[in-house]
Length: 119
Ligand code: SF4
Image 1 (cartoon, helix red, strand yellow):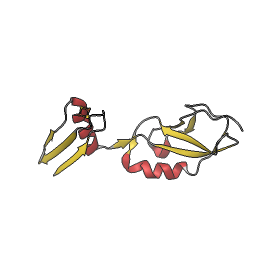
Image 2: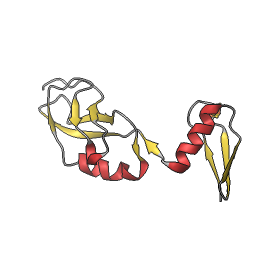
Image 3: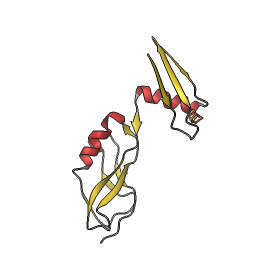
């Protein structure tokens, strides 16, 4: 098995190549240890920070930007967005306020990513 990916850990964006031969994994193209760790994480357990919006009642805007406080498994991102589409919050909200605890049992919380004043 061989795979290529772009490292997103810094602006250099190294092109990393992963070659799996039996039990051995060979990683090339990275310029630092961080890139190697990123590649291994991507093939074993890819994760992403989730950013989206949820409806907010009585706020200055009708949608509140939110994000996960940790990376969530990549294969659960879509399900989490669907789960969050069922949630609405009430203004006022402070940046960092809890919007959804332990979303879908991931042990990741969803928090507000900005303040939202009352209308
Ligand atoms: S491998 Fe290292 S130098 Fe290259 S993009 Fe990733 S973090 Fe940056």
